[in-house]
Length: 339
Image 1 (spheres, rainbow, N blue to C red):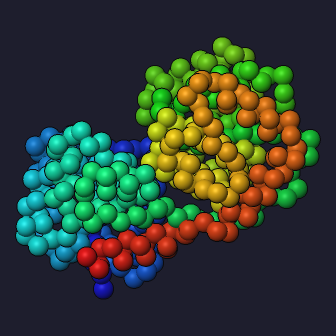
Image 2: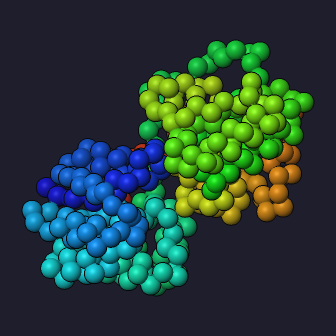
Image 3: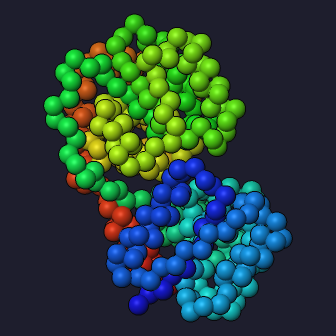
């Protein structure tokens, strides 16, 4: 039996793509027969104090597992600890959720010291290879298909509903979305911002103030972090999903949208474009010139019933072609066992 110890950060407490990936990967690996133990480490990652790194070093020792999968948030600041472990014969794989910067010598040293890199997005893998890092493997996220089919008899008179799922952070650019919505108040729609307001409280307050300042409080709701049935209810209401982050290594929420048969608008130039793929279930838009492109695509989608139908049909078709978490786990096992 393959034994794997996953070492994960405990200081990211909101529902993030990395946290979801880590939990789903552990579950899927167990489903394939691997014995997986999970060690969560508090600390000031990614920098970490000397005491934090000592706890990490201890987590890499003792016990039987010879295969360790370490979240990049921890690994990137601890090259010495990784070098010591690999020199002792342990296989230490770094799970990279974001592309390495290439400008941090500590991070680069840590990644070079690892047995190999498990990259959760093609952009991350490409960047790692460009930096000359070896043994790079791609393990893109899978999806869980909804347990219940999307309701077929929704209120025909309901206004189209937008959804943006993600923690409220400047990178996610909820403010830009709210500003675009303020420009299309002449059209019928509703919207929900679904994500934690606690990661950056000042930004979350700024988003709420923007909603109020534009008179959108009756049309745009901020739900806070949701999961389970409450999140499913939001997906079931949605007609179009948006992920317009300034940077994304992949964009798991794009696949989650498609799994629910919901088309997506993403920002061009980010890893979310790869997640959207060539299904025709949405569009990647150039936002370098500002808000106009976002306003235009929202207006076009709202005003063109044929476009809405075409995107929705493509999203429903794409849902059956997406990788499952079992596929992700197989790729990880193929890498860590075969190397």
